[in-house]
View 1 (cartoon, rainbow, N blue to C red):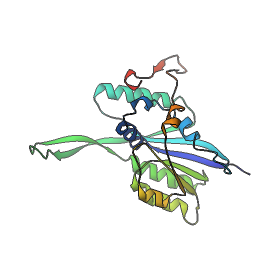
View 2: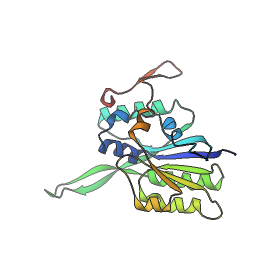
View 3: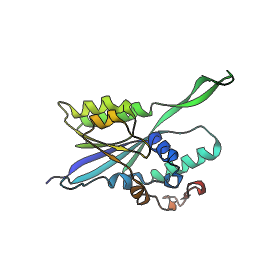
View 4: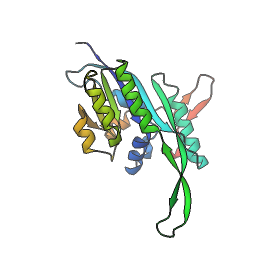
Length: 208
């Protein structure tokens, strides 16, 4: 039986906040290729993971969190099969419900749109047979409906991060799974990663 071609599409913020809500910061240092590979080759369905596309936005502060994220993104960049796609943060006005004070806070933009666009574009280019969609965001339902319908007929496996689930995504997916702690434990990056130039990236102490 010919192996299905798989591309994984990861909603970085949905995954991060799922782990955060579960209080699993020890799993932030994830090898996303290993994580996605753990969902391939279910009985009777040989698969080949071609790429992992990771969608996120670079945070603007505070400095310690910004540094940890940058270190992690550098670590992911050392893995050939992982591609990074970054959205933006833009100031969004808000009013405090308690005191009425007006202020601005950074809000992540474009990540879900980039993911949905890549999902559909790759389907039309026939780059995969099955898409792994790692997210619990129902905004991705229309894109999944497109890739499953005529003339594309692609499979979409939704993989829910911890503390994330959505009935609409379940309803439209070809199949759905949940990320477990056992899979996370087996999918961590090495404590130290040496880049080609000799610079050593180290897992942040706060993530241990």
